[in-house]
Every structure is written in structure tokens, then in C-alpha cells.
Length: 128
Image (tube, rainbow, N blue to C red):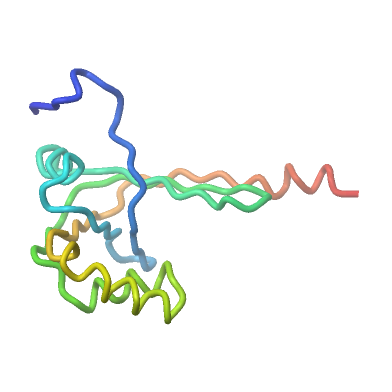
């Protein structure tokens, strides 16, 4: 693998994802990004999602790539936009970024390993 970061740490970038229990984890990223290239070369990726609200929780997942969709079907762009944005903002985002979105791909991963932490019980000790 030819990583231009000269033995740097793992590449971490925020991105939009989707997941339904029992299905693949899906991420959207630019076709020509370093992230896309490294994932394609490795044939796998990991994802970490954190709830920013107290009590904090996170889940990480890793597994092999099982599919790449290029180009991204418009319905997938719409579903991701509506997952992260309210209806009006999602519609405006899709209209304003339609030129950039043609450069994106979807990468699907079959989850193999999950790791989770939920600090609810810990936080409950301090409620009072």
C-alpha cells in the first residue's frame, strides 16, 4: 500500500454513514479522496460513531468492503441528507451540492467486529 502520509497514523475524517441492523455499514466519500483510495487498497475499513450528548456513548465497527457504488444512486444521496439534516435543509443541501455530489461513491462494509461503550451507568452514580 502506498500511503503518502509517510507512516502516519490511521486516516480519520468525519463522514456520513448509514446502517440498519443486519445490513451493511455504508459510507459516502469522494471518489478521488485519500480515504477512498486507502479503503479500496485495504479492502476493509472501520468507523467510530460517538453520541456527543451526556452520558456519552460510542460504537465502533470494522469489516471488509463488500461493495462500491459508483456513481451514488440519487436515492442514496437523498437518504443520507435526510438522515443528517431536517427536510428543508436536506433539500437545499442536495440542490446546492449537486455538482460536487457526482464525485462521491458509496462504500459498503459487512460488519465483523463491534466495540461499544455506554457511560450511562457511570453517570448515574453522580446524579443525585
